[in-house]
Amino acid sequence: MDPRLFEELTRSIRQAGAIARGERKPSRRHEFTPSRIQAVRESSGLSQAQFARLLNVSVKTLQNWEQARREPTGPAKALLRIVEKEPAAALRALQADSV
Image (cartoon, rainbow, N blue to C red):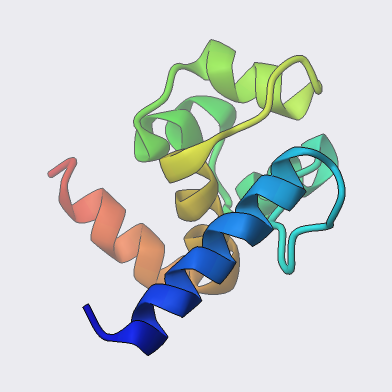
């Protein structure tokens, strides 16, 4: 392995450990507050049931996100970011699957 790549990987692992221990803040974080999730859904013009179906989650899950009982993770956060930043493209792509 290239020594520079190995050093970069080692540095990244150390940084991840420091973040996990609370000694360092992550460089970027994509948080979705309940009001932000609701705003993304409302800007899409979809009901809770339609938006939940679009994201492939249950209505109850979406309601839990919007009422701060749960937080979206992983792929759900990524989809929310995509719908927020590029709503028309996201809706076209995601609705194409449901046809």
